[in-house]
Length: 106
Image (tube, rainbow, N blue to C red; front, side, top):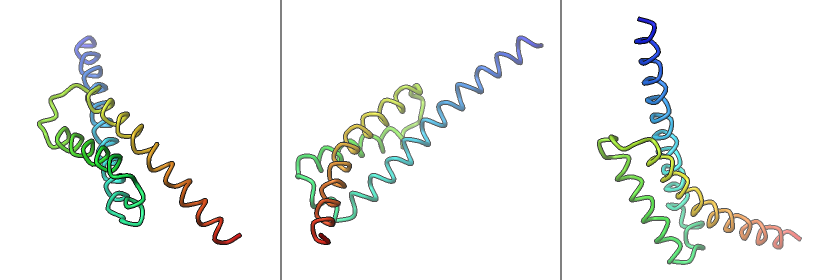
C-alpha cells in the first residue's frame, strides 16, 4: 500500500509540473499578445520580427489548444523559445521608448 501511494505521488508530481508548464505558457502567450495588440508598441518592431513573434504565438496556441498529450518538456521549450524572442524584441523596444521619453524631457 505504501508503494502504491508513492507511485501515485510521483504521478501527481509529474501532472502538477505539466499543469504548471501549461499555465506558464498560456499566461506568457496572453501577455505577449496583449503587448502586440498595442499598435504604439508593435508598430515600432520591424515587420520581420513582428511576424516571427506572431508565428510563434500561433504555434504556442496550437500546442495549448491541442489534446495536451505532449510531454511537459514541449510546453517548457515552447515557453523558453517565446521568452527568448519576445524578451529580446520587447526588451529592446522598451529601452528605445525609454530613451525617447528621456530625451523629450531633458
